[in-house]
Length: 356
Image (cartoon, rainbow, N blue to C red; front, top):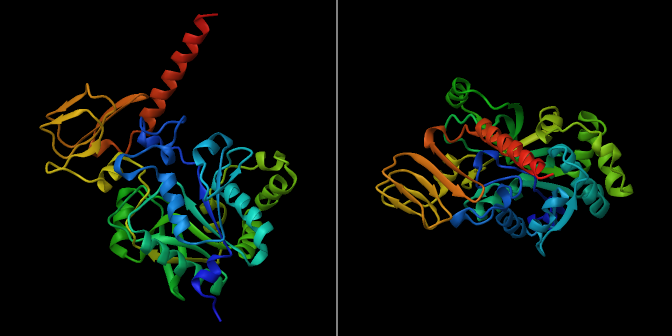
């Protein structure tokens, strides 16, 4: 007989991955203070919201995995902190949490993996979806993912094509890499697809077996760090995502559809979409003055800022920089941000050298 929800949740370790940089939200998000830890106006800090959602699940324990440098920003009585010896993408980070959970729950435990930088509107429906996914994975011996109901032909997300029904969900027919616009439109027209949320439920025994089969060496490297404080094998790993290392290769993947108001807030247009707006369609926060603008996102830190007469623009002013870009182009600023950061780095190095 299947355990009741709260019973199986007591054997679940919720893992919050605190490694996202959020380059496309510069200058709000920077290497010094990345997207999960920046206060996003009325949305608050995404890491704190992730912890609150984890608590609402009533799991056995909550563990945050991240670089040692983010430990101070992850201080909370609700979550333990598990430091990576070095950054190696999400597959090794998940393996660290899994080995840690195995030592406490054994093979009958499970791991729920949550990114720290997502926005979810309806916590109640999120909790219901996690429990549904957990039931499918435990009953079917599957590795589960939440699939977000798509709202349009988005090119920023990977897609999941659903296969045959599997309990309260579906077997995964295949994962689809982030498509270009024409392919995204074809996928939407064909139907039967969801966006890959990056949120996973893994029974530990199934995870160990499949990760060892699909990506040899990752589980063992995590064990070497967790059990013997030996970072060498972990440091020698290639940086692989859990999608590429495991989910795209296993034949035991399952998906449950999710519809709880989700966004990964990866770009300023996606941030604008979830913020409250005034009568002129403007959103944002800060003390700067906004006059005669429509459908703009304006974020300021100083009262001595005036933004006037703009339409469909993003203006972000922080102590780390100033961004002004058309809303339609604000999702594609990464290469420009990298160029700005590289130039600032060169100037900083040159300035420090001139004083010697």
